Image 1: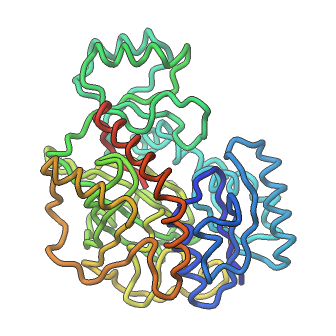
Image 2: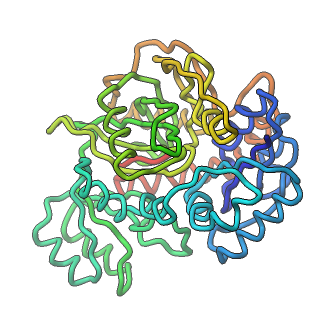
Image 3: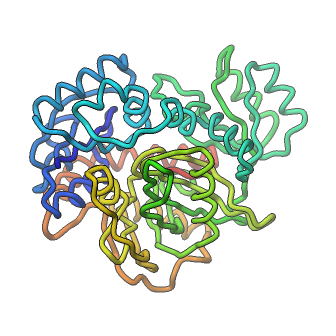
Length: 407
């Protein structure tokens, strides 16, 4: 049964989509993808049967996006497994299950749950409700409430967009922003408008913390069919953004925490969780819940050859998912962002205690001997604008002292 990579928005250099195309395509699954244009790395993969060029922003009317998906489905002509790569796609699929179910296969989940989980405020509320540790947070509705918060807060604090997955022309903050002083917060808040769409969160100092990842697939009974844990070694921007380098590390405590939370909320499908272990109190604090495949999902594969995308495809097509332990010590590197991340981390002196001294194997995000064109396409598109973009991210990081996690 075919698979379709569903992505909304303009981010052509997405290694997660390429990873999913290769993962299923190598097993003979006909793979299709929605792409920004005909020259993206995903479109260049030898394992892609067809790219449907459909430029979107992620801000379109949902009915327009649903009709576009159905149009793609009619062109494929067969029932197809949907593989969303961003929150906009995951939320749209969940909220329009009835319209999409006749032509596509996807995990059926409570309609509003993915939107709630992708929201910073919604996730925090669910964590409080179910006893899952998360950073202390406030959700001011006006500038006056921010002033009140500033009088009592312990600085530094972290500011994030409350509904981070909604694409906006002018977000309140650029990513996860560390704010050092009361005066800095009030100055920044003056530009947030009458109704600030932000979350103000407890700062978890990186000197006393470790960034961990959980990827898993849960069936219709919210039972894990594939569960993986790992530690993030580097990200870009440093300590705040997309995974650049990570290792598979066994962590039964973290796996149990994730499985318990998923069972409580009744989620089904692929998850990508970012957690920060706070050594001051010994708790894993949930920072982000991505109700879809994470860009670095190919870090994780079981000894039986199952990753979360393969697990979902097997389960949705009525087949059993082979059991197997994760490949502990395996490493994942995103070539175009790991080098600048390495330089930044060496400068800061930060190290990850749980990273193995030597990798048992390495998975590269872009370069693959059996599928070289996505890597070459990435280089072509990345070199000039990519260097400028990396510099802008670095400057933003230096000015804002950002901290946090991302996919």
